[in-house]
Amino acid sequence: MADACLFCRIARGELPVPFLAESVRCVAFRDISPQAPKHFLVIPREHFDSLNEIKDPALVGEMMIMARDVAATEGMDVSGYRTVINTNADGGQSVSHVHVHVLGGRKMHWPPG
Ligand code: AMP
Figure 1 (cartoon, protein in one colour):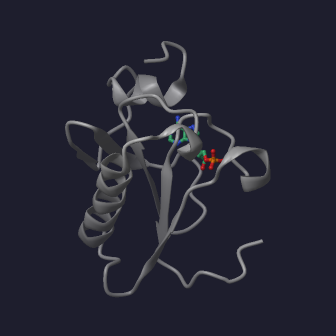
Figure 2: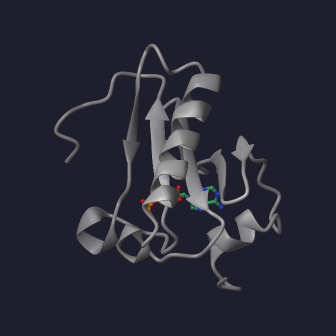
């Protein structure tokens, strides 16, 4: 647990951020600055600075399954969506609590830049 970490605080329910889904180990909520018509994040409740620190492959799987399931409830399973994990400076990570971005509701571009 990291007391001051923004996403730890969200996971603990200390901020007025509605969850799209929650489980014992993960929560999903909308991104505050959406980069697509649909943009939400999936995070583990436990603090890891980035993907580099996660040792349990099942936790990564749980994050991705929650991403998939919420994408479906958001109506993106057929039209499609993108999952992204930015890691550290070159990856464009700005919040040091690992998170999966899920974006959709429009056609995504490639390469992502
Ligand atoms: P990244 O740049 O990959 O670390 O992504 C961090 C994401 O967290 C950005 O897309 C931000 O818009 C998002 N974000 C930051 N603060 C909040 C917040 N309070 N609630 C929801 N999303 C947030």
